[in-house]
Amino acid sequence: MTNLTQSQPNPDMTFHRIFDIGPRIQSLAFTSDEVKAYVLHFIAKIKTKIGSNCQLSAFPQRVFTQSSWKVHAKGDKGEVHLLFNISGRFQLPAFSTENWPARLNVELTDHVDGYWLIQYLLWKLAAIWESPADLSPVFGDKTVGNE
Image 1 (cartoon, rainbow, N blue to C red):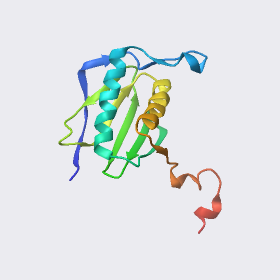
Image 2: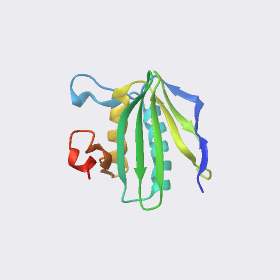
Image 3: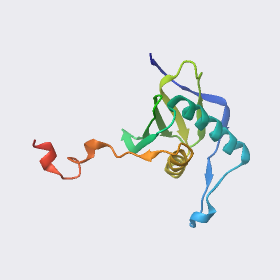
Image 4: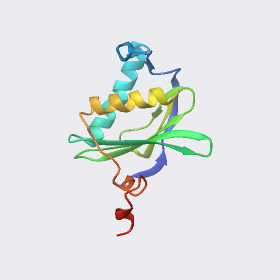
């Protein structure tokens, strides 16, 4: 049974950002070894929860003036819903793996960290990218919407 509570930020572990990236892709790096270990620990919890044969989907959204990314990871053992809030700081949620919240709220500095964290999740989870099936009518394929 899924607990319908939301995760809370971990006030003891707040950083400015996850990645350093310049105009060249080769410059992509974690801001520190501490941040990398923090992210890897978080991803390990997710991997334990969802298992293998992972699929990942993500899309940016805006509610009033708040920007975020809706991220969904699923595998053969379960699924995890994440909300990457663009808040100007980096903070992962504190939660018990015995009582998973319905959604994990992750605070991110900006969309650059959001994009690269999604790419890192894809890589570390060995996930397949899953496009949301409901985008077809939005982007102009009216035959789907008229059936």
